[in-house]
Length: 417
Image (cartoon, rainbow, N blue to C red; front, side):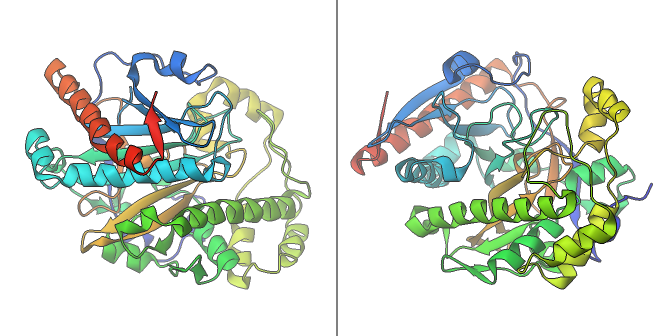
């Protein structure tokens, strides 16, 4: 079955090397999946391993042993205030510094020979990513269960990756699996952002949008900003870059939303605005001065593939979560930002910003692994962690806390509560 949105993708996407299903270990007694409408302490209970108070702020960062892991050894860093801070731009500068210092410490911790030996991390893959989807609360999305800013830090030992066998994206018969991996905005979103930003952002190079580059380098689709090295995570301009990406994406989303609906973006649960007629949309898009002509044409093509949501449609979506995830657009700006490197250049990372219009999974569930640009993780049907494996997972996380905290204290950045 062909994908309705295939015409907005560049030529060659069918050759992207992907893994359409990759089971990962799961805990034996997970809680019921539900939105966090409570405090962090009551929602995560004993899975909160540590809480760090950020000096000079009222913000805390929780280190969490996840109930629904993305990998055998993964940690979630969550900004744990009761008042929700949803985006990187909502955080105090000091809090951002703590988050990215911990992200650097995570990579250093895994690379230490004694840690690698203790936890059998030979040829491990590491992936760090956060999602943003503030406005969508009526269907699955990448930041669905907790709208607080949180960074996924994932580590797959090489032994867990032995079964990775990428296939071309075009060989996947099921259109919805393909769309989960390659959202309609997978390449169009980055094109819009590059039009908005240009070829440079805060001193970092913004790469051209090129599917051939992604295939050759085994990288996921997305806007790519080349960092100087992993040390960039400690630079103030890295934090400025993330904030600029967020605000630029917000501005672009609002401009295009208004152009296609004739109204400012005001999110509302179980409601989607009607679209203007095609001629009016084309004219309105033409008034966005920074939007390139080719990008304008592709945006218009994408919108032509959408239709208004009727009352009957919405009743169906409210009663059928699968149908909603497949057919109901997200209710606002939705993106992920990941730190990725090519297998051939492990020391030259990219910030990869990925956008979604329909996708129900975040980029934490679509990591590049081994020779795959993306592997769609199956977190429901993988092997169950034994009691010994669960204890070793907790030992790994507690060891990380003990390893990272002295560095934060020495830098006067935070302390354990």
